[in-house]
Image 1: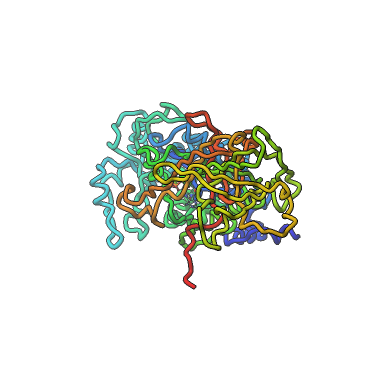
Image 2: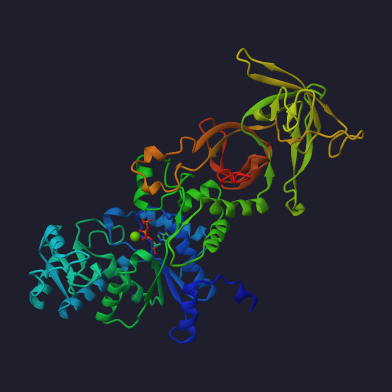
Length: 556
Ligand code: ATP
Ligand code: MG
C-alpha cells in the first residue's frame, strides 16, 4: 500500500485507474514510438518515463516501436542510438523491437478495405490543386473530381501505385471523409504516397509508404495498445485516429490521450533543428555535451536517475509551459552531491614551492572520498614540495573578505597542511609565475597548538605526481531562453559554451572510467569523457557547477 501511495500520479494514470476499475482493460499496454530521424532528446525522456513508467507500475507492457514511414529521413544508426538510449535510461521494452514497417503488408490490406468500402480514393490532382481544394479554417474545402471514381478503378489505381506504375507525386491515396469538417485533418487526408526510396527495414520492397496518421493508429491496434499517449499537437488528429479504427476490421481498440510536450529554456528540442546544429558543425555531434540529447546529457555526466527524477518533478499535464534549465541542473546536482566521490583538480594552475618541505619526498596522505559518507572510503593523495593551486586562489595582498592565499597569511591545503605565502616571482609582464610558501608540519589533520586559524581551505594538486588533463568547461549553448524563436543561430550562440582548460588532476583519477562522475572540490561536477585529447591526456567534462550561476540574483 505504501508503494501505491508513493507512485507519481497524473491525469493519465487516473484514466488508467478508472479503465482498470471499470474492467475496460485487464492490463495496460503502452508504447514509445520514436521516428528514427535523429537522436532522442530530453523531451523524449518525458514520454519514455511516462510510457515505460506506467508499464512498470501497473505490471503492464510497453513496446518500443519505430515509427518508420519516412525512409529518406531515417537511418539505421538512429535506430541503434535510440535503443541504446532507452536501455541506458533504465527501461526494457516488451518482446522484440517493433517497426511500423513490420505492418506494411497489413496496412496495405486495410487501405484496400477502405477503398472497397468507398472510403478511400486515388487522387491524381497535383499538390497545388489539392491545396487549393482544401479550404481554410474559416471556409470549407471542395470535393476532388477523383472522389467519386468507382471502387474497382480505385483498387486498380492503388495496385498500380504499389507496382511502380506512377511517378512520385503523380498520385496518392486519400481517405474519403469530409471536405467541410472543422478539423482540417479530416478533409480527405492523404494516407499513402509514392516514394522511390530504399527503406532501412524493407529495402526496395515498397515504393508507396503509408502516412503517420493512418499508420500509427493501426500499429497501436495490431500491438493491442490500450493507452496511446502522445503530445498535444496530435489532439485534432485523434478524430482521424478514431475514424480509421472505426472503419477497418480489427478487434483491438486503443485510445489516444494527449499531454503537453516538454519545453526547456536555453535549448531547442526539434530534431530538425538539432540536426542543423550537428550538420553545420555548431556542435561536435549528436552526443556533444551541450546538446539536449540523451547521448549528449550522458556524455555531459548526467545520470539516468537524475533524468528520471527530472521527469517526475515536471509531471504530466495538458498545460503548455517552459521549464527552467535550473530545474534539470538541480536534479543532477542533487544526485552528484550525494553520490559523486570528491577529487582535486586545478584548472588554471600556478606553481607553489614549499621551501621548507624536503625535496624528492612524496607523502601519501589519506583523503576521504565523501565528507558525509564514510562508506565511500578514502584514497591516497601525493603531497610534494611543489604543488599547483588555482591562479585565482592567490593574491599578493587582499582584504579580509578574501579567504584564500595572501602573502604573509596562512590557508589550509585541502586534506593536507597549513601553508603560508612568503613571496612570489613574476615574469616581464607582471604575471605571477611562482609562489613561495612555508608549511607547518604539525597541522596535518589537526589545528596548530597555538590556536592559529587559516584564512580558508583551497584545493591543490601535486606538481610532480599530478597528471595533466584536458578539462572541458561547458556552459549553455545559447544565450537566450527561447533559442528556437531566433532568426539565426549565430546571433544567439554563447561564445563561452566551451572553454578548454589544460589543468592537472590528482593521480587517482587515472583509474576512473568513462562517464564516471566526480566533484572536483570547489569547482563543480565533472565526468571522465572516456576519450583522450591529441596530447594523450584524459578529458573531463564539466557537468554542472556547485551552485546555479544562472539563477537570478534577487535584489536585497
Ligand atoms: P521532434 O519534434 O523533436 O522531432 P517528434 O515528436 O517528431 O519530436 P518523435 O520521434 O515522433 O519525435 O517522438 C516520439 C515520441 O516522443 C512521441 O510520442 C512524441 O510525442 C514524444 N515527444 C517528442 N518530443 C517531446 C517533448 N518535447 N516532450 C514530450 N514528449 C515528446
Ligand atoms: Mg514526429
